[in-house]
Length: 125
Image (cartoon, rainbow, N blue to C red; front, side, top):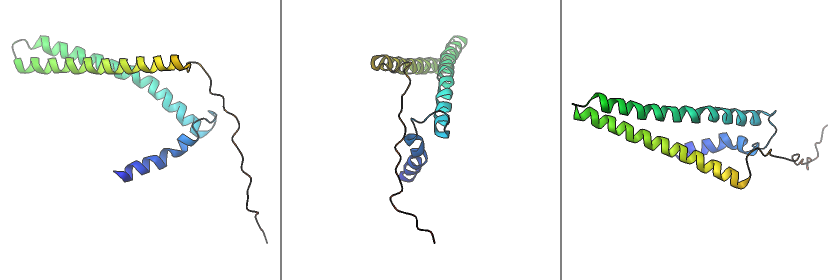
C-alpha cells in the first residue's frame, strides 16, 4: 500500500509543482483537461443518481405482490436519494466557499518563475 501511495505522489508531483503555469504548458493543459472532464462528469453522475432513484420507484410499483422485489426497489430509491443529496450538498458547499472567498471568475495571476543560475562552473577541455 505504501508503494502505491509513494508511486502516486511521485507521478503527480510534477502536476502539483506546475499547477500555476500558463495553459500553454503540458501541465497546464492536463489540469485544464481534468477540469473540463469534471465539468462533464458531475451532471452525468447526478443524472445517473436520478435514474437510479426512478428505477427504484418503477421496481417498487411494478412488484406490488413480491415483497423481495419491493424491498430491492425501496433500497434503490434510498440509495438514489442519498447519492443525490450528497452530490448536491457538496456542490452547494463548494459553491458557497467559492463565493465566500471570492474565487469565482477571478483569474489566477502568477509572476515569472524564479531563475537559479548555475552555481558550478562548467569546465570544458
